[in-house]
Amino acid sequence: MQETAVLLIDCPDRRGLIACVSGLLYDHGANILHADQHQDHDLGLFFMRVEWALTGGKPLDEGSGGSAVAGTPEGSEQADSNQEVFDLEKFRADFAPIAEELGMRWQLTSSGRKPRVALFCSQYLHCMADLLHRWRSEELRCEIPLIVSNHRAVENLAGFYGIPFIHIPVTAETRHEAEQEQRRLLAENQIDLVVLARYMQILSPEFVAEYPARIINVHHSFLPAFTGARPYHAAHARGVKLIGATSHYVTEALDEGPIIEQDVARVSHRDQVEDLVARGRDLERIVLSRAVRWHLDRRILCYGNKTVVFD
Image (cartoon, rainbow, N blue to C red; front, side):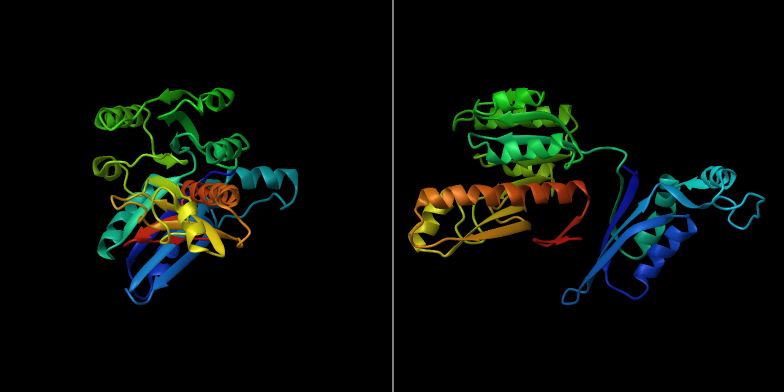
């Protein structure tokens, strides 16, 4: 796949922001592949995502003539040799003072380095199996150095995919020590993103603070309805006609982090709790894999307790 760079921006809205960013990219010879922006008019905020190729920009000597004819082998060789390799660090240095002047928060990343993802789960394996299949088929462009669980149910699945499995039991008495070991492993493996694929333990505020907007959870309910551990039972007792699942970033407040993706399915009075659970598992797989893919593709910006998810 073509190597690209992505610039994510959020800042106070003002005139000329798009022209400012695109103009600088043009000056650096960028070949822009995708660009999208959003304004929150109530808060006066501007959000932007730009993705461009790191090779194949404008020719190094744009105005020079040549004897080779376009379309001939000689012309193709000359075009290839004249293509710029985008200087990402020079662009970063030139963009930084502009961003500071305009009050921008920004992230500049390259697809050349795959993010390193740790997967956590407990005893339910449907989300884990789905993520691993998508990873093996290269739908999720990342590295997975380890799988962590407080049960051994996922051990064989991890072995099938050749990923190191770490079993860390968690009890009320050992919760602090278990989490310390988890955090040590994440630091040792230089983890960029933690995915809770139905990991049924609450993370401490210290753990969450170490990975802001870098822990994704799936909740088996259409939040904010039916928070907690048994949402399908609560939904059945309430007689709902729609059930849902939600993927969100983890914050200190349980099940209240910025929502990334949601989906729903229709149910009826004929459905029992077991039917809701079975249908819900499909929704959980879908919303979690979408959230992880969008995060890896650098399509998400958080502000307040909300997200902007770029197309």
